[in-house]
Length: 384
Image (cartoon, rainbow, N blue to C red; front, side):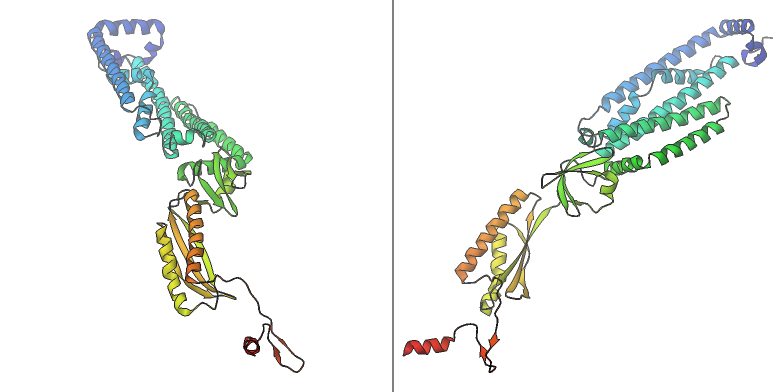
């Protein structure tokens, strides 16, 4: 009765001569099964390579945006040939009564290959998601190129460090000391470079949340300018006064940011003061005049009405919303409205007030001395 190769004593397999003899006997006994298994493995390899090429073709890189199809294409492209071969061997392993030493070797290689391939897939998936959230080529052309490079290095180090620990653990190595050393080293590096990492994570926050992008006009505090570059640690903003302001990402995100580029309208506010001598019936017609002039400019009139009794004027509030965010349209609209108001008020006999103050004095006997001539006395003298 012949003994199956799987029942062979491992101690015998450790002897090279006996191992060769055992392998020769296994091949002679199972050559047909071995040939069939090899053919099936070759077919699996060809099938997986075909699927890989098809996935790469269907998920071709998009220059404008890193989509989920692009990410799937990258995962397929990063699938290594050696992993496909090991996977195929693992699938057909056992069909031809594989000897224990060969079965153990294939299982060991598959474990290592699967761990490394999973690390490669994890890295590409994380980086693909980051670039997808960043808007793909739009940010890669100057927004956070350096930050993405640092992220790639950190992700690569992390996933392959985990893969190394898993491989060593499968080999029977005590990895407790290695894990502790990596943890202590990571804490030390983090404490030493916490300023750099805080700015880096702030850059990642800009990458994901996208509160603004290159070319946007933003404001914070009293500053207002155009974003020229978003870097790994700093953001460069060209102020409207001409200066180039360089601010760290963390300090920038700690502030309240106004993105004026994405607004859907520009609000123009006017306070118009007319004299107190304006007749009440004319005052009642002013809001309709203002609304008519605003609508003539295709603007939305948000407020046109009497506001308050001023110190030397009757104040009217006139607020309009100009569609869009282009000041090149809003400024000429404002100029035309101001001229139209002057023309209309002039035609209606409405006088715009300016700050005035009247002083009253008294004679030694207490008689009030008027600051202007007595109109009635002058008229009587002219009649004489």
